[in-house]
Length: 198
Image (cartoon, rainbow, N blue to C red; front, side):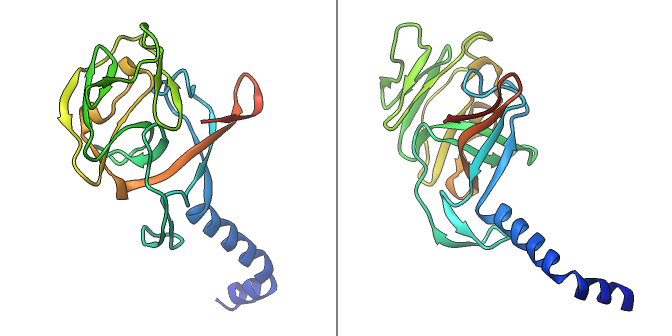
């Protein structure tokens, strides 16, 4: 024990730096490695994504306690959260907010009775602040709705509609359960370091 204390005393600057870095990763920013093709073509397996943990509120390091409230999520945001089914961390797109009526047929999304497709082929969907390219290469996946998203909840979908386990399967996500907003792809296997906005 004495040797351990002596080692800690002699290396305290390094220990403090390590603690500060870990606290920053816990509360401010981190990265996420995309594990599957559920968000193609926006994200491909192996992409390294920068995530902003302060977007939805500043949390006490190493906890889920919110110290300062942040922005509300917006339709079109790419977000990180833990799956309600098995706790695995997922990345999906927010497509509907509390109070929205949502319907999905053959992979094509309608919010409050209006199609989000920017073209007849439905390869792009337009949200208020952004647009998303979707893939129907694997079909449209499970149809859904029409259903109204409860207040305080979100509907999340993968951009690859027929290749995504999302709110159609595990239900709506609580806003408070969002872990972070994904902001940019900073590394892609085939291209190396990139800086692609989401």
